[in-house]
Length: 84
Image (cartoon, rainbow, N blue to C red; front, side, top):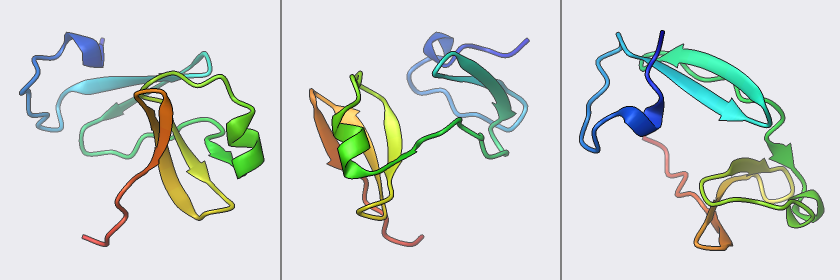
């Protein structure tokens, strides 16, 4: 069984052997630290996003702005998407 992300120490580094559970919209997905997590429907237009009742930590892709956005401190913020 994997660890709940809230149970990991604050400075824990995942080495690929830990199983991380991703919960969104009542759907449970599990992935290792070296795999990508597939989240259920996270792409919204700006109007759809604004109609949500978000909680801090919610992540979406805004298809109008072509940007990843997260809800932080009662506001939507755009993530820095500079290529790595």
